[in-house]
Structure formats: structure tokens, C-alpha cells
Image 1 (tube, rainbow, N blue to C red):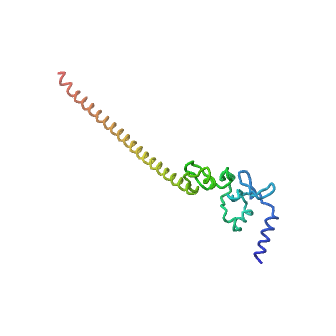
Image 2: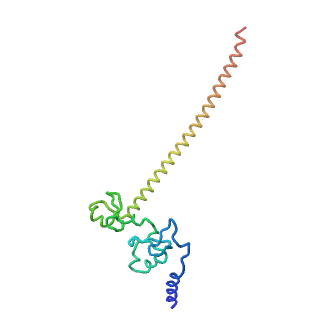
Image 3: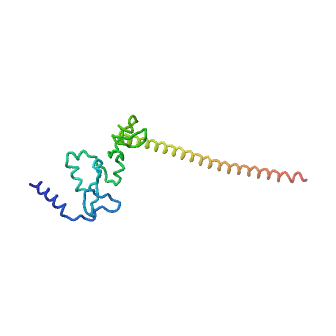
Length: 190
């Protein structure tokens, strides 16, 4: 009985209540494809097989219907068409390594037959792994160069100290030589 009341309230309450301004799609938001009228609600998720985006209310069917539960839902995106094959209108779920592009299962059987293909998810994981390794190498090279820079800076400082010490020593020798000459000069003049 309580479940019936909740269901009635959900159906009548959601339909009768005016949409608050906060949940309406604004500029930059993805609008629900099922909502009608000028004030469409903001979509929360996009369904790749359905090629549609849904607000909280219209998304419920994807959580309740056994057939729709199997659909792949992603965060609402306006670029749904970018995830669909332009030749076969099917989801791009395969990556062709030969041609380096995402394709649908139909493309695997047709234009990309015999090509090196993997699931798009597997390729994404592999690319992320490669990116991580590249970032580590770049970081390692950066640290090595930073270490060499510090070594060069220390060598420059050591060289400066050496120059200052050499200058002092040279001045000391010149002064000592000058004093020796001055002491020896009066003896030679007489």
C-alpha cells in the first residue's frame, strides 16, 4: 500500500510540479531529449545505444527496465554523435590499430577486415599506460637535468672561489715581490 502511494506521488508529483529553474538546462548544459516544451531539464546521463540524454526523471526507465539496464550510460555529453559510426550508426566500441581509429563491430567485418583490432577500452588502457610511462621518462629526464644544472652551478661557484683565491695569491705574491724590491732597492743605489 505504501509502495502504491509512493508510486502515485512520484507520478503525479513529478508531472504536476513546475520545474525549478535550477534543474532546467542552461547554456553549456546537455538538455534531456525526452522532456518537452521550452524548459527542458538538465540531462544527467547519456545512453550510448539509445543515442539520447536523460534527466533524472526520464533516466529511471534505464534503472528499472531489465532490457534497458544493460545499456551503457555515460555522463551527459552533447557529443554523442562522436561515439557513433557514421557508416553504420552503431557504437564505436573497437579500436583499429592499423588505421588508428575507433570503429564499430560492423566496420571490423567490412572495411577493417584483417586489421589489428582491440576493444576501445583495452586500447584506452594501453594508451594511458604508455602515457604514464612517457610522463615518468620525462620526469626522470627533468630530474637528471636539474641535477646536472645543480652540479654545473656548484662547479661555477667553485671556479669563482678558485679565481678569487688565485687572485688573492697573485696579489700577495706581487705585494711580496714589490716589498722585496723596495728593500733591495736602497742597497743597490748606494
